[in-house]
Amino acid sequence: MAASQTPPGNDFVRWVEEKSDAVMADLADKFPPATSGPEAIHAETFTQRIEEVLLGHEPAEEALLEELAALENAPPLSDEELARQALEDGGSDADTATPE
Image (cartoon, rainbow, N blue to C red; front, top):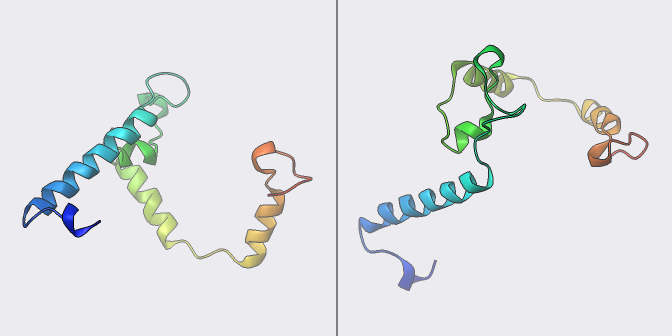
């Protein structure tokens, strides 16, 4: 940001919040909450998507927070395991003969 674009004093916090709100609104337009289809959230088959939380469409549920904590505390994968997974993944064309 150029010096001429820097807001004076306390206006910086307001400027950052405005920019953040604009970005979130833009992302919300690109990724609207699912209201039907397999991505829709139903009480009997509840699965929360992190995108919905990050975009502010819904608050984080305890199950999602526990899953994220488990991922954070999981041991790192070895290079051999990462290579094995890469070779098994068919990539965007789902062809395991040409791994990504």
